[in-house]
Length: 210
Image 1 (cartoon, helix red, strand yellow):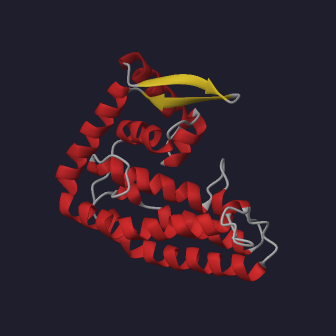
Image 2 (cartoon, rainbow, N blue to C red):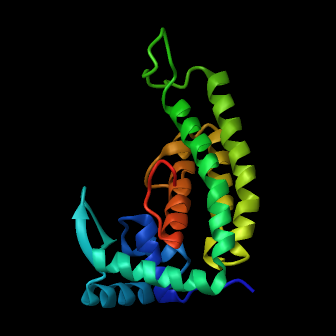
């Protein structure tokens, strides 16, 4: 049976993988009760694990250094209970896939023109965009078995591939922001959350090899 995280751990972990988020978004990340999450976050603030601040007109929560250590301790304990080898093996498979994803997003944002590799993609070349979307779709299919392996050990990894597929479907429907938009569950946002989730779970720092 996969390990099921307790609500307090999920609340703290949601802040970690989201980076900066308001109470509603923290609650929605793992489908937790908002009122309970708000109380838990206030308890965490009293413990010095989270801080609430305003950025760009938005008020949200983020981890303190102490909170980050607390999150790492909790995820390490979960990993010991659930199975380190499986998550580590999935991460090794994820690293090259992550490089392909980053390359695809770069191609979505930039389309070389006249020898200039840094020209912004104006999305008028439909064949170019279609090739990128097909690549993103292929990456999504390869994500499915990785998620299945992860959720066999830790239930909180469930949902990434479905969210990613929803984003690609919306991008195919002409809503370009669903590839790399912020403030929505775009392909890029979902992917970055998964990447951070793997790093946090394994206690790794973000870098070219991770």
